Length: 615
Image (cartoon, rainbow, N blue to C red; front, side):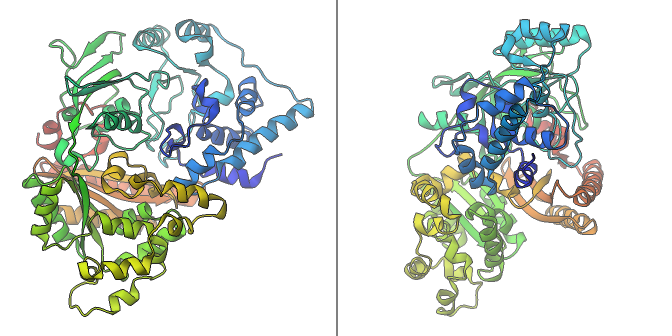
């Protein structure tokens, strides 16, 4: 018997893989301590339950083990609720109940018979680490991306080291078996899907901090969060992107972009060296004179050139006076001008322009609170854009001078974050009305003399914030937001645990373009065109962010399209919108020097950024 509410929750999984990293200090699902397939993680169990409901898979030996190893500990509920408000525990229980009921009724437990090729795969990686069980395959067959159709692979293999990858690649070549190397499956573009062999690198978890060489060696199973956490423990910072993204895969597929790229760059600028296994099973490194030239860039869609088996990622120094500030603006032009000016002056190690969609999603622990905050920022505070700057005290002093001290500092940000439920309830109206000003209302917000009144109105505290979540989650949220890092701008932007909240209300696909930062009219027209395209197809959309880089000469723009994967009409609409947006980007890129599409960086992420930004 299928639980329809559980099925609805399973169908809403965003595949952000946040259940695969211990980003809240809750620990991970106990089952994954000794089981490495994605099917043992909550994300995989969600996909399996959906496949069961659709009649796509039988109850197999693998499925029975997946259900049996779930202890219903509830960790997944805390992790997933924090990001999307989903309750996967109901799905986990429904899956266990389904299997137990199947057994009670005397149903068959299917066994996936091995074939000769599977036996060879198991001889390579070990019997436990290669499978053709339909339940395991179902967890690797889908992607919420609207332009990717489900593809069920024939086999999954989990290599433990580079040499096993070499043997797998040679085996696939000998049997003409296509293969795909899977990161954490969270790219939303379908690149992790394939009908042959899926190589899952989850067992390759090597991570070594080399202080003398200022680099960290990471194997392909290490996530951005895990690398940043270990680097941070030892007093360093790395430039990484989404927390659940695997570092090597993220480098290969996008070059890694984050707001830290304003000072650290992207592409090859992130690496000291990297090791690969080529299509013929040959091993090479970037720092090798006769290696394939992965530093080059071709403005086109290209096949995967090799499998990255290790990368030596740059470490960056930190100081003990780092902090963050937000500079509010009513209009985009002045915000863009400040971001450009700061980057040209080398002020700050992280810079970005954020809109109300991002800010409200990041601050709010629930979608309803985010909806209300999204109205408060532009309508009550007259804030349409915020320029985020991360830096030491000298950088912040410079920002104060450049803006006339018109900024939200770390203390005020913490007040707004922990007092966000009252901010959303129009808690600042009385404060704003008590001041006379011809300037936008955010001018009152940032005044030192208003600080005490703002704190009294918002009552910022972990208890206040926790009051906005479901009752059974309040103790957890109160304890979680009692940690200082949960409202610290530097920490939150280093670890990026809030960014997945962007897909809380609906799944989204980002239109990402690099463009010349001195061509303001071009940037305005691209953003306006993305919005017009979305509107014409009935697709919800919003400004994402802009990051300056390379001393203000270039910028990365993100504009986001939203859709519900469970509504066919919305999927059709966003497909048409993305096709039209892609055509607009390609046309602009061909016409304007310096415009580059992120899609062309897929499998070219190790190239020198100068090659795709300027050539």
